[in-house]
Image (tube, rainbow, N blue to C red; front, side):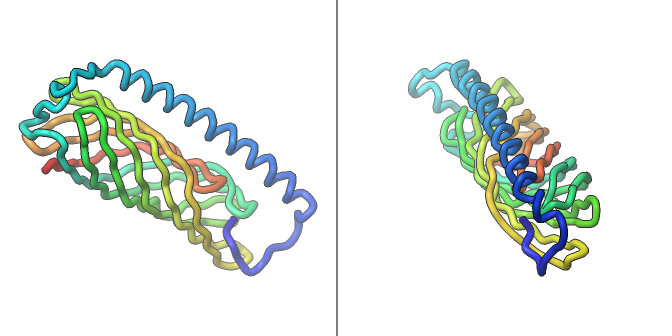
Length: 212
């Protein structure tokens, strides 16, 4: 919850509302993690494991290789922050860097700024850092991929009770397709689902990526 100077009313219902939110959040996390886990297993099982043949050239470079990029997105957020309903959408941006160890597996770190979102009497500003495992399946000049990781967020807010802030971390997951545009330039189109405590955010992204 966003910490502030105080608030009045609803004290007798707050614990029940909190328990209900935690229960919904737990079920959502379990469902998302299970689906992404099954998808990752299916993707990895479909990739031939042929020893040294896996360490083949990709886009003119041999893996392991490094990459970085920047992109923009749009997201829809729904939930509640400190007992205030949040239901809004906004643009976002991110910058990221990663390493591909072998053609089908890598690790990626990023910074994302989700800007301001609001609702009934309150608004919040969210940004943070993330780290994810990325599983991909290179096929010619494109590669479908899935990612699963953790996002460490900071949240500043304002309400009728004054300003406040908090921070935390939640799992996130998503997937997309990477298209090779040139020998070292890619375009990525991605969907990802984030959580900022009791606020869920469904997002779409377009990134320009450079490989080194």
